[in-house]
Length: 184
Image 1 (cartoon, rainbow, N blue to C red):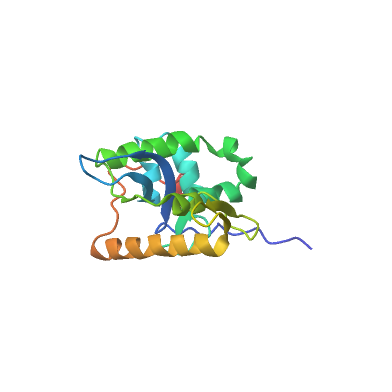
Image 2: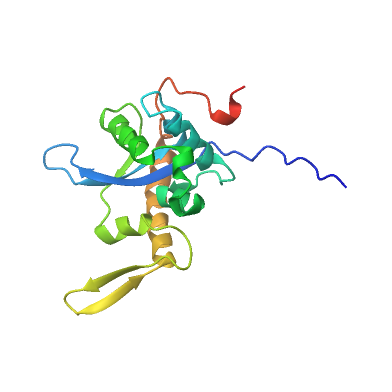
């Protein structure tokens, strides 16, 4: 018996992209910024490497929950541990372009200066086997951080983002390309 054709993938445009990057200081006497959250639609900005940004946007919005924050490491995990990134695009160039958009105020973002451990945790993929080990030099002990610790960091970022977007949604920028799944 023939199987029904799968319907179009459920898309959620109201999601956010979280990524770590090289630290920068937005001005004199300011805190280091090393992690950024942007609206998924910012990936469709014309100043972002295309079609790479649109392809990442496509992955980011497929099958997600409204308001969900998707770390770059989660996409890497979903892309066969990163082996499938070449078919999607140059994520390093895209994230560099996004940081440039944020720094030139061509889109809104939640810019964060996460502590080293928190930043490292968002750079690990989801899953029970992903762990981060650190040495506590004062006690001389090995500390193991796992998925629950990562979830705590993401929950904290979500609290900041929720408060921010309650006042005003993150502006993705102007002159955005249409999403790939809407193109004809």
